[in-house]
Length: 133
Image 1 (cartoon, rainbow, N blue to C red):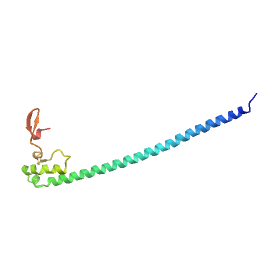
Image 2 (image 1 turned 45 degrees about the horizontal axis):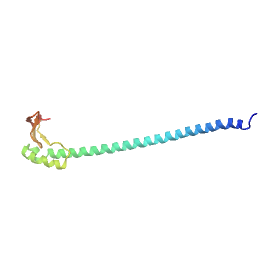
Image 3 (image 1 turned 60 degrees about the vertical axis):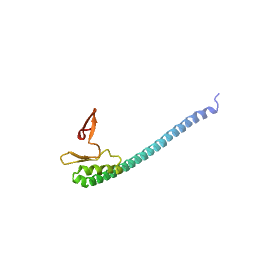
Image 4 (image 1 turned 180 degrees about the vertical axis):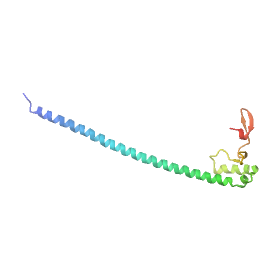
């Protein structure tokens, strides 16, 4: 007693399985394509951000270079006048609040002016400024 539905099931089930398998493969291909496009878009965005950041840093450093050139050409530095430099340097903090200190150094590497105090505490003992860490 062969049922007339039995050959239909034998032919329909493998066809349905093949359709489901192809649908899964197609979904995987589409998903992979979307993943690759997203990955490329993120890489382009990251490269653009890195380029903008590099330009910002370059512009900021150019500003500092200009400022340091102007400070080096100031009268107190040119004349190596520590008194005038001590008056001049604190005003620079208003323009450049992120700086730690402004120091003027002569050709021999000796500090002749600083905007900070000339002594500091080292293990409880005061030491001269050039040796302070």
